[in-house]
Length: 383
Image 1 (cartoon, rainbow, N blue to C red):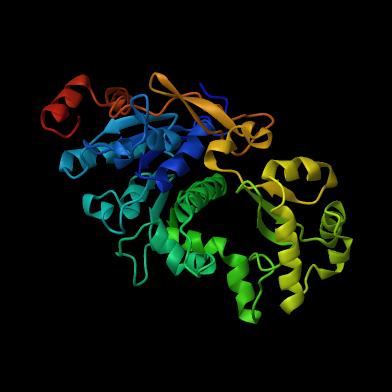
Image 2 (image 1 turned 90 degrees about the vertical axis):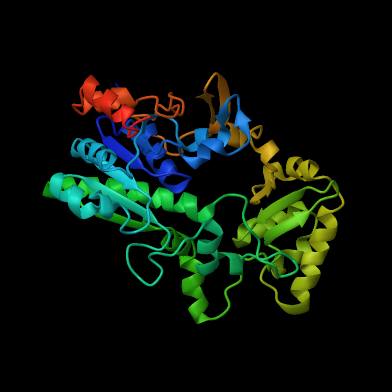
């Protein structure tokens, strides 16, 4: 039995790909019992390469600690199985388009009527209402509409697609946050509720400061336009991220670099800013990245190396935030639970489940007999 902060919490996961699975993995890491409902073909993430051993690294990264049940919810009997499971759950998380589950009597209205204490969380692209509620999309689309892509461009003005799925991961965090808030409200009221999380709103949440500030005119301090907050190339092709926003850090940096005359040019504009950046760019280009890191480490100037993915795990500041997780017979280096607790630590010991690994076990707990399970399997409802 888990001693995590969410020990005893039961979660039904009807999601796939990244946002929903990462949200429910966060809950599983903290001790919740997460039952992942999969179609007979499985979560598409299972087929995403590369593999670690026989396991998709992507699937393993966002599905550890869960139990997998294969149910074809497109059938009447399959939907009935999920309704029965939902009766014993505290939380349900789903990522279908609005209205799809309602057609199978698995929508929030039906399940909250059957289980008034249920917290029902929906993750969709554009939310439960509005002109785009039925529209398809993926991470890059939400970032485009939210202003994220248009505000992050390369030297030629082209929008830069980030390597991570920014809206997906942010929506997952908001879903977990929303679920926990609804559970807290349930402690006061005794009733669950429907939690509506959209990936577009997640993208917009990340743009809260720049979008709001843009109403008052240009606000470019954090865009790389100034020499105190930008990225510089080094002799070996590496790069350094300088974040010397406060005057004290900028002044220390200028003195540490032997450029005290630049200390008064932190927020210079026009040609003075161009010359200041050019002067620092020429200086940083004279030595290798890690030489600069060593030379400036003791000066407290908000400067760090720009690491490639294959360098991240070896960095001493990062290594403590990673862990080795089981992935079938192999081990997978991945990100550890990002929140630490002093009394109820996260214990992400279990691997991601094999497809349908826990079908019989979970259905037995929900009151289905062995004969029920065998019949449903013969009829193709279970795999």
